Length: 104
Image (cartoon, rainbow, N blue to C red):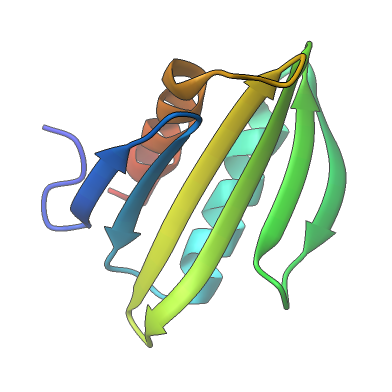
């Protein structure tokens, strides 16, 4: 089972996967960066820790990871993916769950 005890309130929308994650901001930030670093074709275009935004390009897909702090040990993680301006929610979900799996 993925993210038992880590993930709460998961939703999949038009172009993004969003959920609350029970970890510190620093842990989530570091794992999100590590996941992108492991993807062969990933090119990080922007990484702004103070704003909680990582923008990357993976092949033809534009990916945005947004982290918002809810409490000290709970963060909202949003992963959005688009290809040629068209939403790619399944790809966003794939990256989202890669991050959650690394947090286990």
